[in-house]
Length: 258
Length: 262
Image (cartoon, rainbow over all chains, first blue to last red; front, side, top):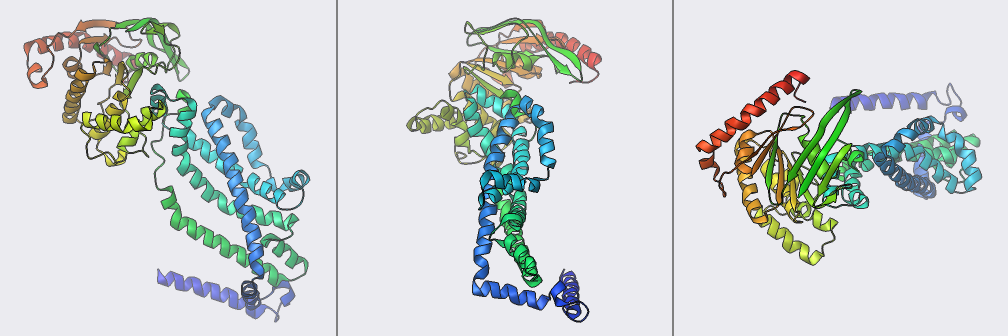
């Protein structure tokens, strides 16, 4: 294991060293910047405190979009998971919508929601909605039909079935979907900021590039990577514990008895 | 009183229409323990589902205590072969589910639940989750959950089929002990002939699909029944042979008709 780690470090070192060496000798630093400059800039951003407001702005958009997108996706997932015929009716339409280039809607979102953070949050919602929706629906559909039937015979109303059986059953599905969606939310927020942001990491990337400051561009990308890495590590470490419980018995269908 | 008159129900399988039951009639009196027995796929479960109001007959009527069953019948308790427990709830939580549904005041729930737990002998496992319980214990939880709201009728669809033979015997005895106190009507689907004769007042033998009644036999063995003695008694053997002669014919012709048990 340590041997592979060592080789990985060597590869990285050769890459960064080569970059450092080439820059200014064979290619102008203006075009490709330099690892040492990027590191310096990144550290400077953190020590001066300049970067935090940008990180916060991006995380706010990604986080808010993730929550709203989850809420909408879960509601749609539950409704269509329980209403099979409606689900079948809408399936091709939803499938088509899933393949739409959602970033293309940014101007429309801008038109609808105005400037500021709202169109960006809406973009994140669009980016992650389907992940939440499809996973939630799969979760609802995997709820054991016999379990639902037995609750109905015990006198449970539809709402009680949703509260006592469906909601607890889909928790692991929703959490898993949120974990898959989190990086998309971050990407959505950054891409949105690149186009219409006035702060945030995406804005930092595009404004640095606009000023021909590729050091800033790469430093901002580095920050994004570090945040993604931290998020992935946190999810990998704490995700399984959050999921805890298994999705329960698979098979049958809730819709049939519901 | 359950009154099933001339019901038919079919299913579609691989584009083919299959009659589960056709022009089927059955009457079950209050307090009666009836075992429905027949080859696999003969429509026994379909009949239970219609009594529970989970399936509507295409023809004919199902009456429960004089009322037509048109929606889910919440006066019955339904127990199937599957463990339909809520995996995230403890023993107590699962048993109290019907009380939660019926909005029984919280103050009354605890006493009822602990009573039920005592009845099915699950003391000490109140706070265990289903995956921490053995198969037999899970059946006890299901039984307690089914009995706690005192349904007038218990519908049981091979409730102990998944258990090993010894545990099954224990659970059958437990069921009879509890039933002798509750005195509910029981409609018990099984394809275990020994089980049917041991526990029921009456055996109804289904034909192969589409299910009709080919034999309706009272079991006049004295209660309370001790399985060890009755199973070696001459009456038991006689009943067994009588039912088996009919049942065998149906099972064999069902096998020949479908090639496969299901």
